[in-house]
Length: 271
Image (cartoon, rainbow, N blue to C red; front, side, top):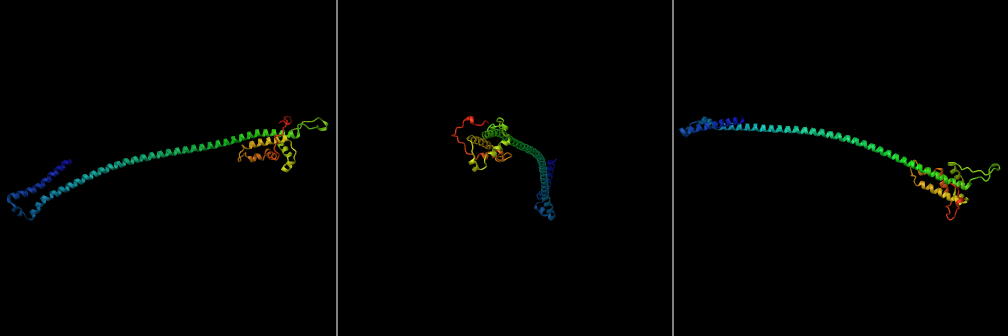
């Protein structure tokens, strides 16, 4: 329909142009130039209007039609752009929703990871506490064994000093067995027996066998102290303050054993 309307308009424009030109040609052909000169201003104006106005009208119509076509094209382009913009907006919304879902998923994963880290920390703390407890239990067990060995050495030292039996029992009775002090009393008894200063220790008459037992005692005690930590609930200061530690410090005042002296085994005190 649009092409038909354009064809009709173009035909009418040609007709509107041809008619004044044909009229002017007929006047020239029938009457000559004098006929055109005789038209006068009104005729010349009418003839010029008949020739120029259809072209102007056609130009205006073509401009209007072109403008309408451009406007239609622009509108279609704008509609397509709006459709594309709507599509992009929908895609952006979907992308934002997907990003939010990913963010929520990452937050959940981060929360789970933090929970696992907390659980790992608690497990590490529990393991560290268990290791500390195990170390303390092992240290206590080692001290129990060391304490038994030190008690045996102290018993041998006691027997070397006081022997096994009294020379004579009470009221003329036969010699009785001399009881061994029990527990911490044994260490305190030996501690009271030894002098407290190096000057007094230099005057103290001591058997070579007692000196060797003292060296054995100090060796066992130092070997245990090397495995005790400096700090903690069970530290070296705690063991040095015990009777065994104070006895070790007191035995350090004794002279070193003379290994050149041969001591008969039968004269050693039984442990």
